[in-house]
Image (tube, rainbow, N blue to C red):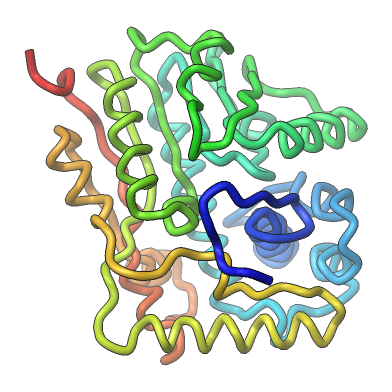
Length: 304
């Protein structure tokens, strides 16, 4: 597998698209193990439909997580899912945009206020797959769900506008597990574009990953290589270290604050403790510094 590059492609069974499927695997395992904290009833059937045997067995419980899906990943899936679920519930704005929607099923499983329009942006084949599979399950959206087929590295605002998005209305935006899979400049363009499309009162939720300290990236890559090796032993060919963009970048929280967003947040470590979950091990300590942030744009940007 080659490293990420501009213009690369993927599907839900390979490349960076497989990370969406693996995240759904973690949600399926977490839902089965801890339904009081997380209830993503669509995660397992969506993984099954992707058709990767190992991931299906993990999501269904036929294969125990063991060393293939580390406990920390499952616990982080619990707090991350609860964070974004609560964000959308509390925002209660007339329109929501889920950036890089992947196998996210919130348009189907959250109690959206009447009249809410939920826009899901992702590659056409991802949206078509999810729409078909959920329809075959008899699931119906709980809001006015509109798929927006677009690559976030390209002119996605035009596709969003064509789907009916109204920039005059306040919007709830989410960029969940997304920014690290974009090149640094593409991340900044994305956040600037979101800001430019946001009416006063819009809300945003994403993650802030601190820039690496000396040796951090080598440790992260070694951990990802370890997991990838275990997965390859089970006939799932992936190289997780090559799916992310490493190196320095603008930290999202600071970048957004300079654009007028007022943000608050908690680290993964704090969220795990708040929910009574096991603290991270030594290999995952840097993950604990990731902050889940959300906030509001109280005025138009740039100011008139």
